[in-house]
Length: 72
Length: 182
Image 1 (tube, chains in turn blue, purple):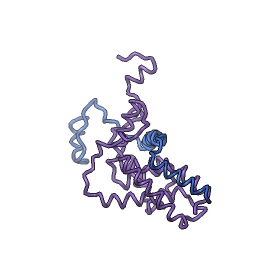
Image 2 (spheres, rainbow over the protein chains, first blue to last red; image 1 turned 120 degrees about the horizontal axis):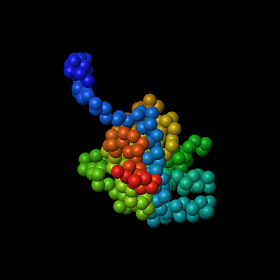
Image 3 (tube, rainbow over the protein chains, first blue to last red; image 1 turned 120 degrees about the vertical axis):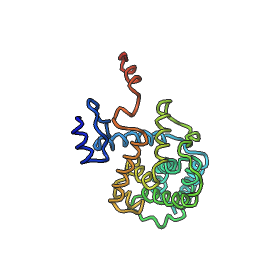
Image 4 (spheres, helix red, strand yellow; image 1 turned 90 degrees about the horizontal axis):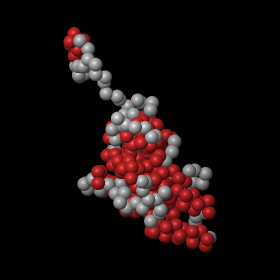
């Protein structure tokens, strides 16, 4: 962008840095894609957690619950 | 008294409660305490459960409320989001998946807890916005806005800008596809 263009930008949008000629602005997240990416990542993470075996103390609670159920 | 459908549904929900508790607390032992206490409370209050309503949502509500009570008590403790657990987990993905897992867990821990729980309920557990609003005791609009903010923040924390930023990097992808990389 020309100096004149940058001066105009500085007046109109003071918080924006000047654009350098030939340099493309950094890619920003696309709002429409972001939920899908994060959602997929979260589901993969969660699937790994769901495969975790239950610890002994929770298994014991499950057994107690089963016994309680069979007594009824 | 527990009926067989109640018991079966409760058992089916157990791994989900544990995954939610681990993700909320970032600590396996604390998560197991939460799940155990949730089951005890649920069984003690089984008469309060309204048949025909969603048992899973009811159990998540109990766990979430227990976590918040505990969170208030522990607020002054020093949290260490980068040094989180996973050591207590038996099954973890392979090396690259493990790093991805740890990174996500660390990023989740840095979210404000209300955003974290809302994002987990909607995006990981698959509850609707309406169910999530009931579980968290908030308005529908609040849920939507929290999910949106949480996704954006998570993407920032994990430096995600494009789809390719997840999964194998460019070199690994090229090797997987038999392409030479300059």
